[in-house]
Image (cartoon, rainbow, N blue to C red):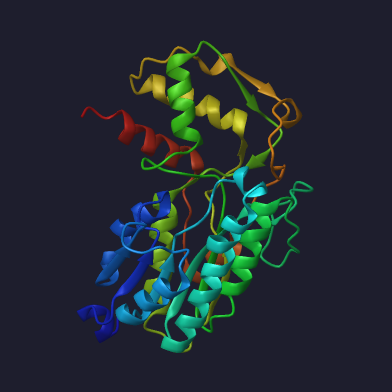
Length: 304
């Protein structure tokens, strides 16, 4: 590890500290040195002048952008809002990172693909987003890659103990209802925010001391694959095993097609991501989605 890493040196700037991934990054990134963590209360990320002033005042060696507009359905009617955060912000950060010779870390999504086929998507596959959210994220990841030193991670079905997500919704509904209807024809890998944060810190630790490293685009998702129905069944079974008072049993989770639950924004049917490049470049072993889901349930259900 370089002297700069060992002593801290210039800070890392974390944007979006209050989101699911940002929350976990506040735990993982300090292992690399000082971190300036920023949320909505500290800076209006929709204000370019405020963001520029923040970056220049901080002069970070790496900008980690965990801020995102994640309201997939709302993006269909609020395209300007989605583009402002998902596309224009990373474009601005890429320019600032280039000027500082800093690293830019940015997060993208499985929604950049159209969800066709059954094979896991590779980084080299052609994106074809189905809706406004996916298009805004594609524009953002392409903008982030204009920074000379960048790490862009596409991930899927993010969940954690902090913030809102499918796991927490299913846990709540499973306590309230005797049965649930859950989509069974969309496939992917539920990915823990903690895994994303830990993998980010691991990758940054590898590239920060290396002047020749250029980073790139990587798929970051849990090991394994399931559909939302299988995911919900796992939540019901594990919550009950951990002692939660569940009304809904795994067998009472009924599979339905996505067509039976129409939403404003289309979802990709195939969100499988091929993580071979990430595992090879950074020597990572990715845990199963089941183990991560159980870990979060243990946290949520622990005695207070």
